[in-house]
Length: 66
Image (cartoon, rainbow, N blue to C red):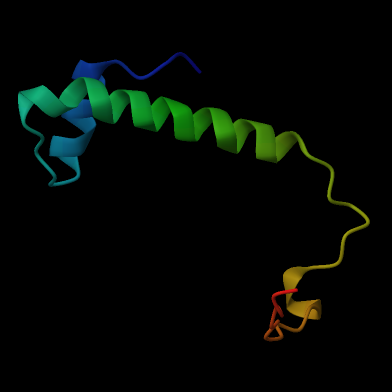
C-alpha cells in the first residue's frame, strides 16, 4: 500500500463524517501512515507459542523504595 496523501486523508475523514481543517491534512496523513507502519510490523510477528492475554492474571505490584 502506498502512503496516504494529505488530500486522501481529508477525503476519507470527510467521508467518515469528520471534516478536517486544511491545516490538519498533512498531520493526519502522517499519523495514519505511522500507525499503518506499526500495524504492519505487528502483523509480521510470530506469537505462535505465547498464550492469549486472557490466561494472565493482573495483580497489583507495590514497589518499596530502597
